[in-house]
Image 1: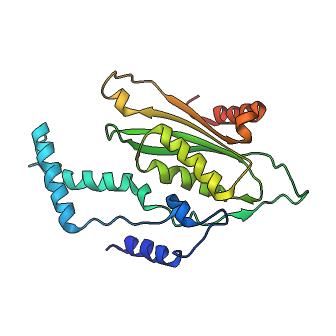
Image 2 (image 1 turned 30 degrees about the vertical axis):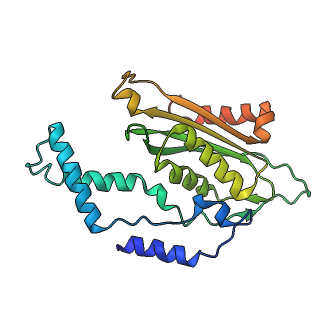
Image 3 (image 1 turned 180 degrees about the vertical axis):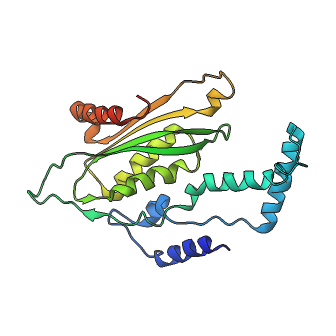
Length: 234
């Protein structure tokens, strides 16, 4: 077990009894830290299988540059899917900063662009882009960096863009129970750019709404205006 794995496991043990203000951890499995267990024997088998596949596809593995390519490929794939391990730092929510009235309506909080990289579960090819996340707080707020952590935890898995947006929105809703959540995802998919239709310049945009954002068109317009203004692709 590496030092990093050991530290994460100790973090897991230390937080095993943690209960969220918004509910029981058993009902919110996404936030639990679960380090993946892959034995040395498994790694060797995986490397042998990848080497056989790469050679069959035409790669010469007998060169200085490619001799360790199967190993590097597997490590890169493992690192790219680290979101399955969870994130031990997603364990904190704070009381709202609004003390004006009991039923205070806070302004919306918008964070972005948050860059992300994912592996499409259909072809295992990357898709990448930026996320913008907004919410209207109620009784709790979340540290700004946690919005980035949530987006990147779910993106570093085999997934699809639709699920990624739903998971980000639902996680924020579960964590702090805000009045509303908005997520805007803009991504380029290599599975459409490198193969299939080979559309080199296409981008896929998706929006996800929870709570007040569903019915409040002005709120949605304000959020989308911020997302469009900040987007590196517009």
